[in-house]
Length: 239
Image (tube, rainbow, N blue to C red; front, side, top):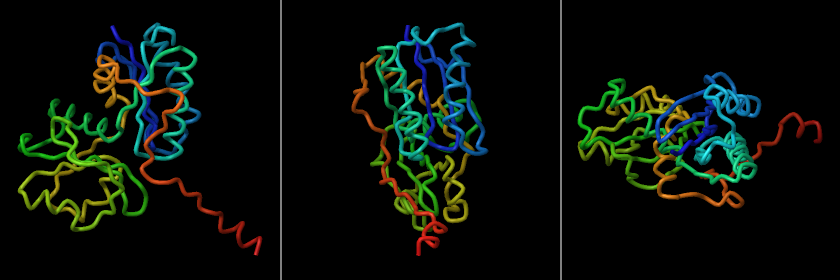
């Protein structure tokens, strides 16, 4: 009986899920209004445990969305997950954040919320905002099998041309999808947001396979180097 705490903080949403045997039993998450992950994450973890009358030492593992995504958000989530694993002596599970987002889309398709015309030929394009016209994305089929590598992709009207040329349906979603509404008129769009609930079944599968990461050395998948933009006002004052 696996009890797994899942954490997803790679976007503007701060989210915590508690699951038992691959079934979601409790969820806490913020909206998209601002980023207060450092303040909210510990509170959410405490709330989902208390709601189910559990102590942290009753957990069997901790799962974390490992990116790609926001540099700061990923650091907060992974650092918290590592701290819990060290303190509790529990294994750490890292889940691809894009695959977790695609997992939510398929759960919503199964619930009749998301429309897919032909699941046997459709491709999923989860998109996480990477600023300007760039998104982190990776294609998956509807069985969540990756169809290539994750990439920081600059959106243009030619994006995913090979998918459309092959006559395949493309489902686009995530907090980066809004950027291509006008660029990709042939795509199908869905309102699907990143959430720790997308980690639940993937984390359970990893737990059963004993697919853990090294808590000491694990680092999130940033995909791009973190760049600090100098404060223009400070530069002017120094000149």
